Length: 136
Image (cartoon, rainbow, N blue to C red; front, side, top):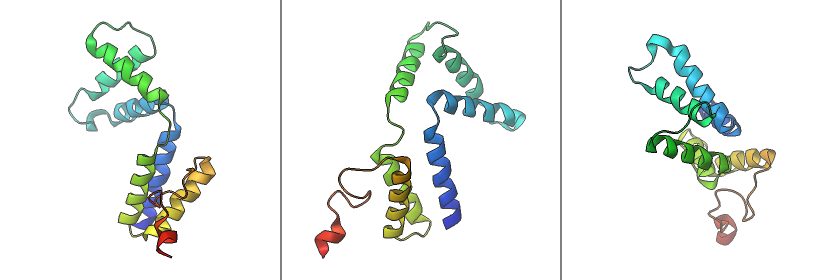
């Protein structure tokens, strides 16, 4: 993956996380719907549509799977949009695309700052101990 592609992937991942769970579900449904016959031969669209109707309250839960789906939707809605694992993975993606570790940390830290999502223990990726300062 090129550096530009990695930045595009980072932008998409952040934008996707900024959507609400309902918006993400609607996006998945519309993409599968638009694929039409090119979609894989799985019932994924029907399942998503069925779950969406349940979550929006258009039908009552009738099975254990329905209740599990509602519980999963509540959990997803309660979770913060960005967690430490998300940012570590994005940094790893950037490094795999050719960014050096400091550069990748700086890109992620800049993005987190612009989103108002900063850490209290220093810059992201410094392993919470700021190894560069410890080595100096």
